[in-house]
Amino acid sequence: MKSISRRSFLGLAGATALSVMGASALSGCSGNANPSSAASSASSAAAAADAFMSQGKGEHLVVGRRGKLFKIAPTVIAENLGYFAEEGCDVEFQQVELAEGFASLAANNLDMMLMGTVQSLEYIAKGTPIYIIGGTVLNGTEILAGPDFTTKLEGADSFRGLTIGYHRPETGQVAFRSWLKDQGLNIDGGDVTFIPLDNEQALVEATLKGDVDLSLVNNAFGYINRDRGIQVVGLVKDFTGDYPCCRQNASDNAYHNKFLTLVDFETALLRGYRVFKEQPEVAIPMMAEYSEQSEDYIKAALYGTDDYEAAMQLLPDPCRDAALAFYESLQDVDQLEGGAAPADDYVVTSVYRRALDSLMEREPDDQFWKDMDAIFKKQNVA
Image 1 (cartoon, rainbow, N blue to C red):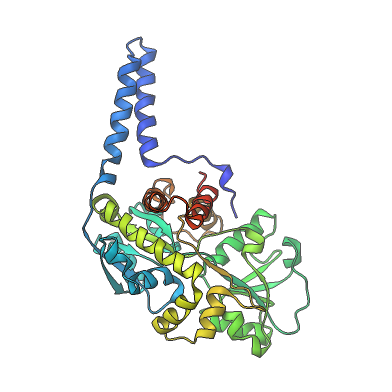
Image 2: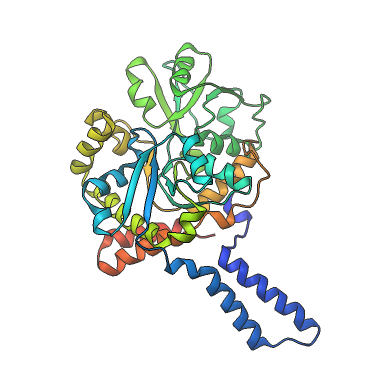
C-alpha cells in the first residue's frame, strides 16, 4: 500500500491561496509587487473559498443507507436516541443500493451515502465532485484458510507461491495486493496468483475445496464459517496498516450548500458513536433489531469475542491519510476507472473537525472527545 508520506497534499482553500500568492510573486519579478496588497488578496481569496462553511444550516438532508447493514451503527443509534432532532438536523434516511446511490449522489439528487469507498474515488477520478467528509468503517478484511493450512504468515514472502481468492468490491483486497507489489512481489501469477470470485460465500467454498489457498473476505465470514473448519489466519490490516472501508460521502451540492447541516449530522453521529463505544449493552440489541441478526453475531462482528477478533473498526474519523493512500493503491492495482484526477481536494476534514470541536467545547473535560481528537491528529496529517 502506498505511503502517504510520498506525496504532499493541499486543501482547496490552501491551493487557492497559494495560487494567488504565486501570481503575486511573479508580478514581483517585474518590480511592481505590493507585498501588503498581495497578502490581502490571498487572504480575501481564501475567505471567499471558505464562505460556504458558515452557511447551509437547517436544510433537509437525504442520506442513503444500504440494506440493513449494521456497520452504520452510529447513525442508527443516533436516530433511535433522538440525537439528530436534538442537533436540529432534519434528516431523511433512504435505503439504496450502491450503484443507484452513487449515481444519485453524483447528480446531486442524494445528499449523502454512508457506504462505499471505491465508488466515490472512481467518480472523483472521472472528475465528478463527490466529497469524502468522514468515515464509517476502517479496515475489515479477513484472510481465511482451510482446516489443513499450517503456514505461518509473517511477511510478504510467506505468500509467495500461494493462490488467493478475492472479491473485487472488497476494499481490503486492493490494499493487500498493492502492499504485496510494494514488497516487490509479482501479483499477476509470477509470485502470487489472485483469482476473483463472485461473492464472499463462493470464496469460503473455494477455500474449503482447496481451489484457493487463502481467501480475502469481509468481516465476520470467518466467524460464521468456523464450525466448517475455516480458519482466520490473519487480518489484512496486520500487513498493510490502516486502510479505509466505507466512507461518509457527500454530494457537491450538499457540501457547498448544506455545510452546517452536515456538521449537525456529524455531531449527532459522533454522539451515537460514543454510545456504540461505551454502551454495547445498548448498541447490540438496537443493531440486532435493525439488522434482523442475532445478538451473538452482532457482538462478534462489531466488538469481537474472547476467541474472535473483529476485523473492521467502526470509526467516523475521515482518516484522510489512509483514504489518499488507498486512492494510490487503486491506481497501483489497475482498479481505478477514469482519468485518475487528484483526490486531494475531495477528501476533506472540515465537516468532521467542526462537529468534533463543538462537542469538545460543550464538554471540555470529557476524555472521550479528547481521545477522538488524538485519533484525528494521528489519522489526518496530510
